[in-house]
Length: 232
Ligand SMILES: O=C(O)COP(=O)(O)O
Ligand SMILES: [Mg+2]
Image (cartoon, rainbow, N blue to C red; front, side, top):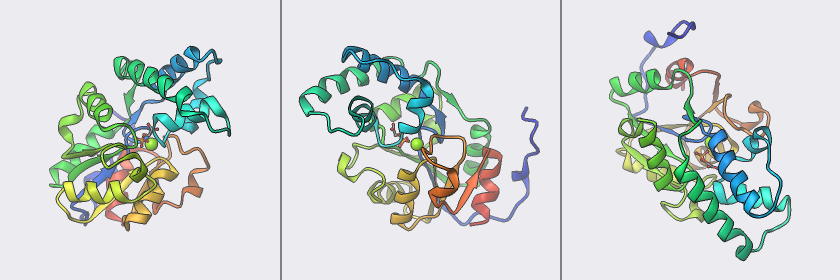
């Protein structure tokens, strides 16, 4: 049992027919397993491993961007160098996707409460869709979501921070008003461009001060999600 009071038992109604969630750093703390996969690829390239604290703020744009950034610093990495290492990273990650990964505290209770109100739940992640589905299955969470959209679902050039994935998610979740919950600038920018309210979680991988993301609300724990949605 959480020691926190549960403020979500009595509050005004929520006007959204659906709530969308980012995955890495929002639903799940995936950074340790992502860092292991990244370090496996860096080792193949003869590069030194990065520490978890170095990897965390680099997550959010998808694994290929993460690898390119880790390999190149600010420099562009040629495709013939990047692609085989990206394949190594994905293979390693797929095989070890839910070793240290954990759901954030209070997540399942918040999802239960939203579902009990008939609110549809979706995921829009810059992870590949197949990896997102696989990870949510491994974590026993896949059945909770009505719709899952990945960074490659519409083509990577239409991934967050573009609004396309969120429009697609809203449509797949039934077409009503949707709010989006995320941890990084990719999420807040995509939500704003899609005309959706954005809630930022402060416990993910923002890569900058949380207040600078420009979200409509910031929550520090999932017990604050329903009150935050009710206030939007
Ligand atoms: O894997 C990533 O870098 C991005 O994933 P997210 O969109 O779920 O944060
Ligand atoms: Mg994220």
